[in-house]
Amino acid sequence: EIVMTQSPATLSVSPGEGATLSCRASQSVHSNLAWYQQKPGQAPRLLIYDASTRATGIPARFSGSGSGTDFTLTISSLQSEDFAVYYCQQCNNWPLTFGGGTKVEIK
Amino acid sequence: EVQLLESGGGLVQPGGSLRLSCGASGLTFSNYIMSWVRQAPGKGLEWVSGISGNGGQTYYAASMQGRFTISRDNSKNTLYLQMHSLRAEDTAVYYCAKGNYYYGPGSYDWWGQGTLVTVSS
Image (tube, rainbow over all chains, first blue to last red; front, side, top):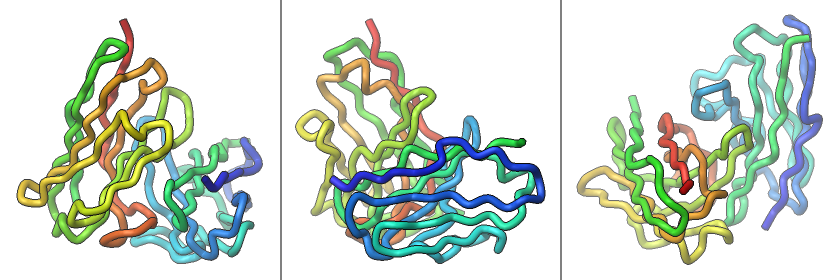
């Protein structure tokens, strides 16, 4: 199975600042990678699929990049509603696997 | 708008069985792969199982293979997860999720609110 590793585990950011989250796959997943946002007590929400395509209704401040084994989620200017946990998921092979998550907290 | 509503969670003893259901609306259900994803308390997301649009192909995480069975009834727009030989480590919120495609690995664009399964004596 493909192991997904996210870093850092926690990111402290001030509102209005940018944030960069990383995700690494143990083998190439090409561009078959998704990012999700999860807030406490809520279901995950799809942000990005195919590594760089924003899902419907996702603001332009969220962007994804990368291919192969290394991927990045960038939030250009954090709003209060962006403080949450972010997960990457490889969509290339069964079984599907998620990274351990990055918690973006208020600095 | 797509809606997914899970049910069937609850408290079950170790070694017991439980069947989860997920009712879907607002979509042509048979057109999409569906999966179950779980989240243990305070932990990350763990994919459990997936099923193709017509139900002909099923996929499982290794630790669930042989204990869990995924199925769907497209005439009822409902997804199921039959769980046997439950263990304490199966305690989690179980989410059903709609895939972006008919079959194959992919991302999931709609999620239910989850149903809590607690395995404890």
